[in-house]
Image (cartoon, rainbow, N blue to C red; front, side, top):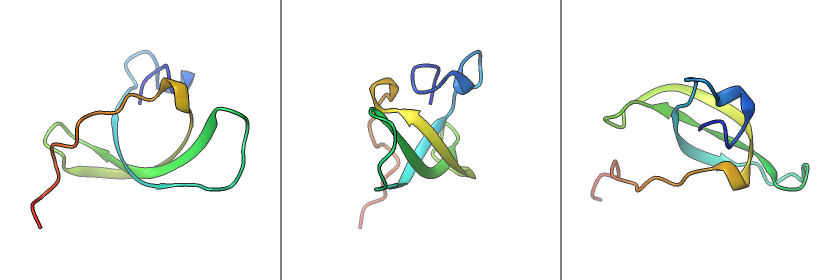
Length: 69
């Protein structure tokens, strides 16, 4: 999450979020609520967060933390 997703994540306040759910309820065009876990560089969950973000500002990172089944 960075400034492109929402101004609240700009200026060094960006973080990686492992998304758990996308809220299906309608909201402003181009925006949505995500619930997930803030993760460190190793993929360890640090905190649960719910964020309101602009879809166009999200950056999809490759899922390198997925464990084999």
